[in-house]
Amino acid sequence: MAGEFDAHEREIWAGRAEAYARTFAGLCAAAVPELVAASGAAGGTDLLDVGTGPGTAAAAALRLGARVTAVDAEPSMVALAAANLPAATVRHAVLPELPFADASFDTVVANFVLNHVEDPRAALAELRRVTRPGGRIAATVWASSANGVMKVFGDALDAAEVERPVFPTLPVDFPRTPEGFAGLLAEAGWTEASGRELRWTHRVGAEEYWRGAADGVATIGRVVAAQPPAGVASIKRHYDRLAAGLTGPDGRLALAAAAVLAVGRR
Image 1 (cartoon, rainbow, N blue to C red):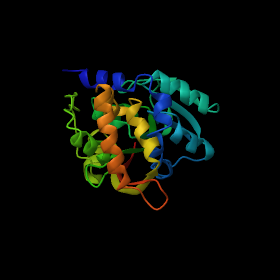
Image 2: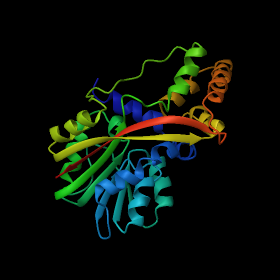
Image 3: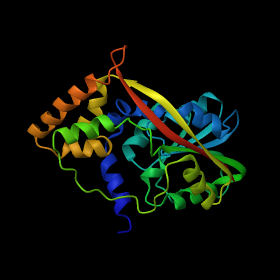
Image 4: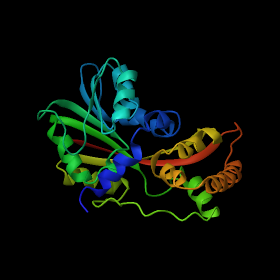
């Protein structure tokens, strides 16, 4: 059903800005340095950060001297980003319709955003519309392979024998590979599209990481929140057991992360 996926995303993220910022935001932030560098952000650049969340990519662009406009579909994220980014223009906006004139920006960035919109091709076309001729896009999504950052939660749910609810799936999907993501940009009209994989080890305290799920952040949070207290306790017991086996020498979880960074030109 048209609109079902987007409505689901709005529900999942409603009011979750603070919880996300103190838990899973650190995971997504790891891609920001390469994302912003690939965007060509520099002094005097007009940059749009779409799906800004707490404003991590926007803040990086500001440090390079860019003039930054940041938008997000979730009002609590807009409020948090506005508080974090006094030097930026922060607005509420929902892809695939942005409240900007054609050719408003030199470059746009989208950090782990395009897998959260119902029609990523339409979203990319809209981002192209608001970009000036010759301008750039840089965007990330989670890779389809070698990405173990949520596996500990999935394994804990399996061990606790939790039945997953059926959530709406992305109706216009694409391969989460360098070639697949670059191809999606090209289909939306971007030229010189290319992609590459980013890999890193996410290190985080086990309790901090668990709080993301316990506080209802993202899909895993929705699943955990739907369980009765005994079910949550069972998931947590299995999570603690599994997390112990993933703890590195520094006492924190060591999780293999993989993303795809794609770039293109208007």
